[in-house]
Image (cartoon, rainbow, N blue to C red; front, side, top):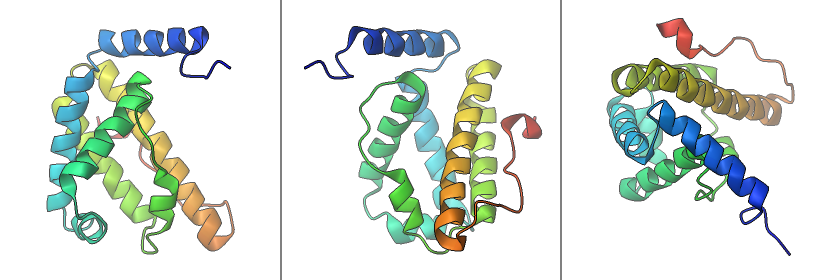
Length: 159
């Protein structure tokens, strides 16, 4: 039986995404630098730092996991295992303000580190999509309604 990871079409799609990302400056080195810089900002942040500190006791392992996550998202690396949705649903205090703030820190890090405007746009769009998905799940699971009150910022809103 052929698995998705070894299927020729899946392999070709992954290679295409990796090539396109590389053409705009997104590679493993950029992702590693970005993840380190972003989580340094998170740890120092008055709003988000305490939340992360309460849930992460092994920062090197978390950073490695975040590297794998973003490599999978941006390069189709397929090396991430985990369930971010479950992790975020388990934090009862998370709300829209946290996600808005997280995105603003993310976009600020992108503004400093993105190798090209195209890379900033792509990575920012992916981050917003992920934040929106996590926040929507939180609203549905906690409030039993898919309606949200506000809208998360877009990367271009901060330009």
